[in-house]
Length: 217
Image 1 (cartoon, one colour):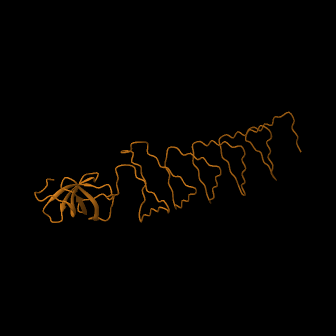
Image 2 (image 1 turned 60 degrees about the vertical axis):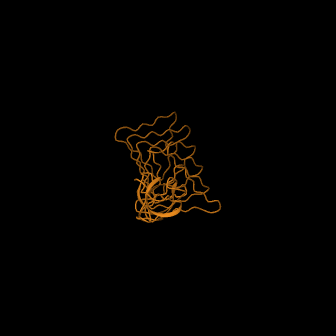
Image 3 (image 1 turned 135 degrees about the vertical axis):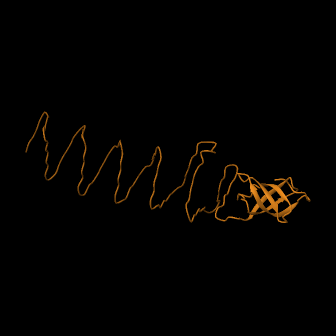
C-alpha cells in the first residue's frame, strides 16, 4: 500500500489495520483521521497479533519508523493470537501459572516450522490429572518408575504380544479365573505345586506323567 502525502507522523496515534502479512509482523494502517495510510511493524512488546479491522496504537519518530505498540480493540473478539519470533518462556517467580479454557485446550508442537525435534517436557514434584475420558495414540510408550499402583473396576487389554519379566510375582483372584490358549507351557526350575479342594485333570487323547518317583495318595 502506498503512503498518502501528508505531514510525517511523530509520537503516538490511533489507526485501523487495513491488511497484515501472514505472520502479522507488518501491517498496513489507516490513521484515525482517515487521510493517510502507513506501513508499520509490530513492536516486540505487542504480543497480540493484529488483524484487519482492529484498532491499534501506533508510535514512531517518522513514517519510516513506525511500530504497532498495542491492539486497542479487536474487530473479531472470537479469536486472538499471541506470537513471538523466538523461544517463549512464561515465568512466575513467586506464584503459580494457571491456563484455563472455556472450550478446547490444544497443545501442539508444529513440525512444519520447528528447527529441532518437537518435544513436550514436564517436570514437577507432584502431578495430578483428572480426565473423564482419555485417548492416547503413539508409536512407543516407556515408563521408568519405582512404584506403580492401578485402581479401577475393569481393565481390558488387547495385544498381539505380551512379554513380562519380574523377579517376583503375586496374584490373588477372589472368584473365577479363566485361561483360554492354544498351547500352555509352564516350567519351574525348582518346584511346581497345584493345590485345591478338588482337582480335575482331563484330556481327550493323552495324559502323561513322567518322573523318577511318582507318589499317589
